[in-house]
Length: 303
Ligand SMILES: Nc1ncnc2c1ncn2[C@@H]1O[C@H](COP(=O)(O)OP(=O)(O)OP(=O)(O)O)[C@@H](O)[C@H]1O
Image 1 (spheres, protein in one colour):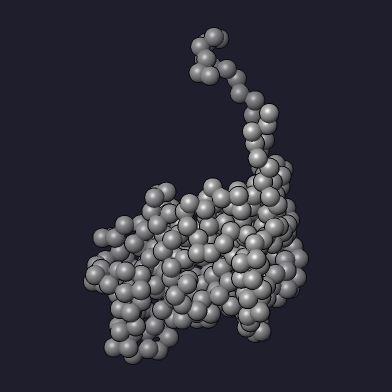
Image 2 (cartoon, protein in one colour; image 1 turned 90 degrees about the vertical axis):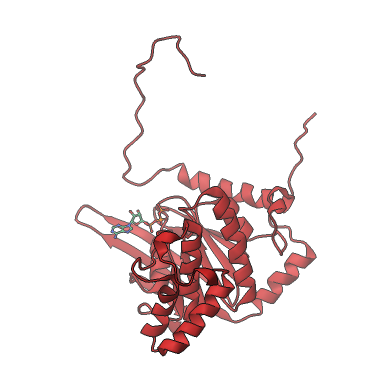
C-alpha cells in the first residue's frame, strides 16, 4: 500500500486565499517591469544575465524572487534600485521610469551595511538628514522607527555592539525611515543563524503588516520565500528568464506550523521541480566536477 498521500495542486486556492489575491490585484500597480534585458560584455564573453523579464507588483504586495545561482536575481534587484542600467526594456515605479537610485526605493542587502562609526540612532538619521530633514525632526523620526523595530533601547549603541539580527533590524529601520514606496531586499537574512533568521522573518512580516510598503525580496531559501511571499517569481539561468510567477496558496496570517501544511508542501514541490530542473544544467562556464581518485584503503568505507 502506498502510504504517501498525493498533494493537491499548488494552483488550487481556498476561497479566502482567492479573495485576498483579488483584493491585492485591485490595488495600484507600484512597480512594472517591461521586457527587461541585461547583457554583460567582458573581454572573454557576453553574458545574457536577464532576457525579456516582465512582471508587476501591487501596492503592499510581498514578492519574493528565487532561482538558481547565476539566474540574474541580484542583477534584477540592482536594476530596480537604479544601481545598474538595463540593456533593454524599462522599469516603471508608479508609472515613472527608474533612471537611478532614489528615496522612493529602500534597500537592505545581506552584508551589514551600517556605518560603524555612527550610533544606531545616527545611522537611521543619516538618510533623513541627507534628504534635508532638520536634525531634531530626523532624531524624532529615527526614534519612532527604532521603536517600531523594538530597538529604541539601543539608540546610542554602536553597530559592533549589536548581534547580526539586530544590525539587520537597524538596516531595515534605516531603509524605511525615508518612507520609500518599495523595499528591495537582497538575501537580507542570508548571513544569520537559522534561529535568528526565523525570528527575523516573522518580524519582517509584522513590519510589513503595519506600514504601507511593497516588498521585493530575493532569497535562495524556498521555505523563506513561501513563508513570506504573496507571489514568488521563479527565474531560470542562461539566460535569466521568468519561469513562473506563483501565487502562494498558503493563507495569511502565516505561522510556522504551516510549514507542514498541504498548501506549503505542494508549493515547495513545485518550486523544487522548477529550480532543480534548471539548476541541473549547471553554471555556465563552470568547470566540470572531477571523478575522484580513491586515496583511502579499499574496504575502509564510511558508508
Ligand atoms: N558585472 C558583471 N560583469 C559580467 N558578468 C556579470 C556581472 N554581474 C553579473 N554577471 C553575470 O550575470 C549572471 C547573473 O548574475 P547575478 O549575480 O545577477 O545572479 P544571481 O542569481 O544573483 O546569482 P547568485 O544567486 O549566485 O547570487 C551570471 O552569469 C553572472 O556571472
